[in-house]
Image (cartoon, rainbow, N blue to C red; front, side, top):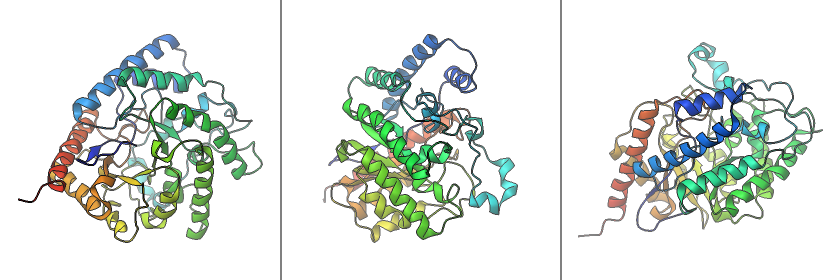
Length: 381
């Protein structure tokens, strides 16, 4: 995880708005329609080159491939692993949706468009070449691995979106996923990239999949998921990893989101050296104060969201700078990387922010980081 001692670095969470023609190809593949596979691979490789250039032109420091080869950040595994040919996994109804059922018709999300078959057989790799292509495409686009990250789903998040009918227990299912996904994690870091582990299960799981549990029971789930994740990454140096948690990337009530303070300490004890989390939306912006009480462990850094990923407001750079400064004053300026709450195109078919506005928001992020850096590193007159 690249860090700086002289300015605030910027990054984002992973997914970026895909070009229209690539989006059509991805959605056709997702729906099982016939297509020209070599043409798809060629278009992905070309598009990722453009994606990397645009991120750098926008002023981002830590960049990736935009997840442009995948339909989403989680269920992409179903086409790469054996064992996922079961019945569709029902979408969990969140606690907030139960409170406000009239909101459902207004909710914009692409999760309904994603095919989420349950695990109904032993899990193993059937297309590890897809991982190698992602790595080769990003390496070709970026030129080198410095300041480059690649996302991969956590075992707990796969289990959240794709249920289990094969393994005798949910815990066995998690360990089976970890045993296979560790190969993807290691391949990413062996290529020189920073590995971002996507772990919405650690926060969003409380609102949906585990909504029937008590807080104490959910904390045990978090501990188990982190134990599995730590085992899957045991051969990877902590500084080569960052962990992203979130409460669901949708503009909705979120009135049952588990507070950050309830999960941040076990998350900070996990192996990844950096933790990315939401910090800009109206439900979680106040939680910067958590770090008034929670001490950041030595060697750790945080990547708070300082722009929102679900609204078309373009944050003022001065506001972005203020948000950055709040964290920097509590945990140290060298321990903060400015990020985004979540992805701008979490599900390929349903972006919540107009693509051109998403890029403008990222520009505001970069400008806000410049302003914050000038103030945080200002020399006394």
